[in-house]
Image (cartoon, rainbow, N blue to C red; front, side):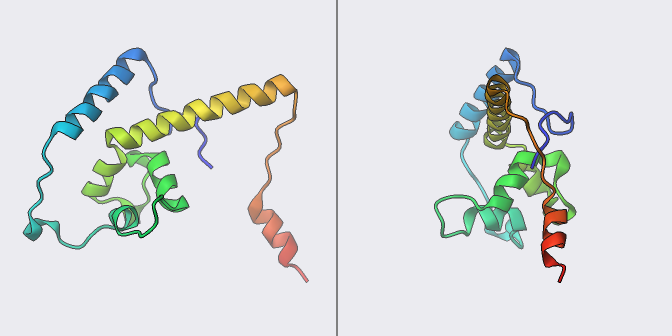
Length: 131
């Protein structure tokens, strides 16, 4: 779960910020991809998860890592290339969409006057595992 109200995860959705994001996406598409085989070295974990998978979608952990952003990556996924990937225009767009969906869902729940409840999965697992 990502708390999109926490400033550490919040993304600026102003018109100027979105215009800048659109321009960076266009620039990244138009920029030639150049990588020298002798400079790549071992492939970092986040890249392996994204590009070595046989699935046509990202697994839950990879998606989560992209949603939390480059500044919040765990130590095992905190190489320069992984930070660049997590701060890429496409990853930022994913984070903006997460904020938008969260806001829409909260608004819908509020309109229905449904109470929001948080469940601690850790305590539920501990409770069920007791003999």
